[in-house]
Length: 466
Image (tube, rainbow, N blue to C red; front, top):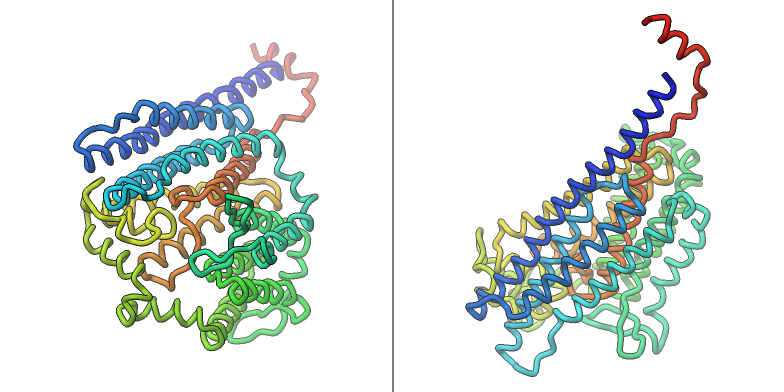
């Protein structure tokens, strides 16, 4: 009987990865059809024919996707099969949209700088980083030993743009550092470091932070002595907002910490404290700092100063012109919006694909977040749970503040849209985030080994029944 059970266990352990490989490969094919098809439609819509480089471009995208697929199946065979195809689909759509904007800008000025080729190169580098992350991080639980190291690294990365001669101000925000001819956004890597730090710190401190203090309005508020961590994160977020003019990163990091604090302690009082601190910080910043007032004014009354808020106005016109179904690939004018290939790529996609296409893209992001949260639900170790939640919520918060800003739902922020916007640091960091989620997912979905010793009377009982 024990031999039969062991054989059944081996059959299940080999059958399940093969089934997941088939599902992921099928979804990957659909994602590649979406990305390469969008690139072909851009050529048809702008030049009336399929681009001449479609074979080389399509082959490159297929090779990168297959490399990532093989890496996942070899290094994380039990990982979620939906995550990688979603990322490939978004990356492909982003490349097609950047190519579309390049064509529009070249039509206006043949000397314009193009970005699609560089983005394809950054995609290749990001896939390499994705593979290396899976190879190096063989067990996500080992990252817990680097909790405070990651916290220190995250804070240092956030402060790097303030270093003289290193940090540069681009588009009104000092969130970049210059390395020769290259520019790098350290905050993109900092969100991974801080997600690891928050998860490791809250695993240790969650029991103390879960203790209730005074009860107010039916809510058990935390003890005063435990408010230190959230107040510290609040002050750091305000510092990012004040000294780096970066509203998006400030919202992202503080929101991430509050969400993980709530998940770790299961106390709604932390959400209440977080919302109160956020409201107080936002109101204080609006009263004290001119750049925050400018962002809020552009959100509420963009037509009050058409020259200052030209980017916002053009983005809104693009969305309005796209309507429900969009103008079609190559039929809009997204190049009229400044920085349409980076900050405002959401508006560019909304103009060409319409509200329907933009909602479909948001659904793909929703799938990535949902699979990350599903991984957290089935993960067996507390650190893995919080890490999966942190990485998934970092993605969700970033998408919300970026797309919310360009659609005028909230004040405009300076973050990039994951996998869609042009930018090497953003692409590299987000591919690494997905690799970490897949690593946690592989551990969570891997069947537990049967360590129970076989009973000596199993075979005799079977023979007796016969």
